[in-house]
Image (tube, rainbow, N blue to C red; front, side):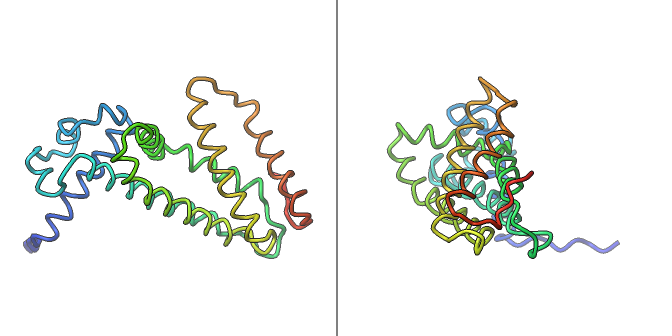
Amino acid sequence: MTDQPRRTQAQRRAATIAKLVEATIEAIAEVGYHNASLGEISRRAGVSKGGIFRHFDSRTDLVVAAAEEVGRRHMRAFDNIRARENADRPLDLAHILHRARNQIRQETNTVWFELLVAARTEAELRARLAPVARALIDDVERVAIAALTPAVPADVARLLATSVVHMFDGEAIFRSTYPRPELEDTRIEYVARAFQQLTGEGRVDSSS
């Protein structure tokens, strides 16, 4: 049996950081930002508190690293929205909206909701998250432009992307206390039709 090659120090460091980031994401998603203490993260990652501070200067640094990773995962999923089965067929805007909503409802995305609410009253967290949030929204708009043009102009695609993100973010948060599933699909149909009328583009197909 061949011995497995020993990992380098850099590889061990990267693996530990990945475990800490994953534990932070899981903790925030499951118990909330304020309950995701260093002790909770340490327990989940199997890394001592001292081990955490060998890689991150503060809890905020670790939380921001987790937010960046959530953003990367979010965008890998959103990038798939650009794929179309047949580019010669009319763009199915309602289908794209369904896919976007499903992605926004993923449990991992609740980490963003937790952090954005906490950032409202924590100045340091707000300042650190601002460029991360800006980069994520910029990426979402980029994907929307790639997916929707030339059926709709780029500026309208950008408007649609940010409007949809804010709408579905609010829907995802509110549905935990007041779910209204009977309105959800109808809402998507009306939004698709409204943007079709706004752009005047007959190619946009709002059927699901």
